[in-house]
Amino acid sequence: MYVEIGLLLNALILGSMTSFMVVTSPAVFKTLDEDHSKKFLRYIFPRLFNFCFLISMFMFLFFSLGDFVSGMIFGIAIAISFLINTYVLTPRINKMRDLMLEGRPGSEKGFNNLHMASVLLYLLNVIFIILIFVLYYTR
Image (cartoon, rainbow, N blue to C red; front, side, top):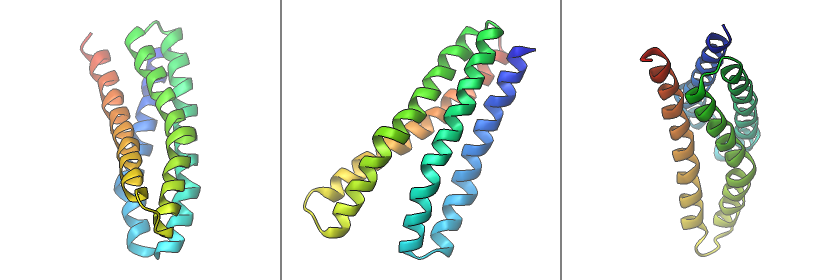
């Protein structure tokens, strides 16, 4: 039963992440001007990452209680990556974006690299989440 609750939490994270990629981000860029989209995204991203971190920690806990070792390993990796995205990458991305808007040399490259790292980490989490399902249902 514990593992099944962990799988439900895993699905919740996947749904939240997918909804953000497919619905929220495109809607923001389509409906808000640059200044408002910047404010909104700077507000929402840390909250999304913290929400997913919290859920992934509960997922890790339930996988631990159910002795699903692969789920535990991927669960803690997912949790750590959300922390990295929230507290390491996002502040640096915002700083580089501000410097870029000021016209500072090299800031655009820094922004692009940090943003790409954040996106890749996000996509890696999606892959880990899918792997959890695959590993559980093929064991």
